[in-house]
Image 1 (cartoon, one colour):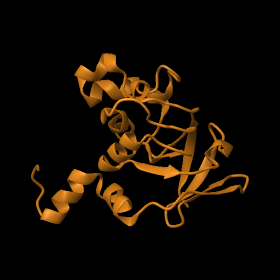
Image 2 (tube, rainbow, N blue to C red; image 1 turned 180 degrees about the horizontal axis):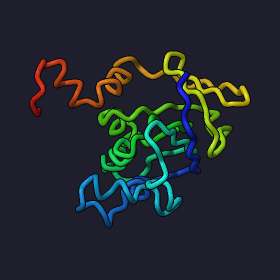
Image 3 (cartoon, one colour; image 1 turned 120 degrees about the horizontal axis):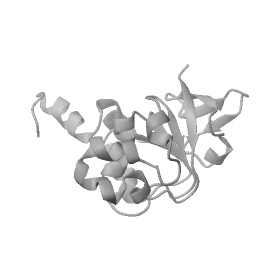
Image 4 (tube, rainbow, N blue to C red; image 1 turned 120 degrees about the vertical axis):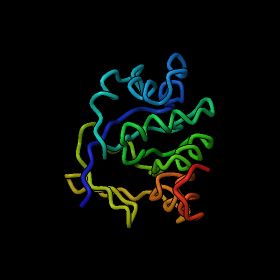
Length: 164
């Protein structure tokens, strides 16, 4: 059993809210503390490794900045659960090792509740027994997440721990 706290957000969370432009010059260590502060100021300081971010439709819309996904990885999020994602954010997230789960019923999850995430069945079960199935994630993307992102996966495949 893998229990995770839910942080709930609405529709259309964009990359500028995830990685505010004013902090882009600071690098990920300077960006991550400001992740989502425009909509939930306490998020970055209160989120814990293993927590789940649950959002509405169109998560990650906006620019192609990969720092939006990198900030969530840096903060230790286990996964993002939403009914839909921006295509650019989707690819950036998996490239950086962030698991995105597409779940049509994500809005049924409640802020602050603790849920069980089953990665074998790609399903979420609430404490009340509500069971939500997520869309299948291709094995190559799950492998990328398990490796910690595309670069780590390539390093392992090439059999070296050096930079690519």
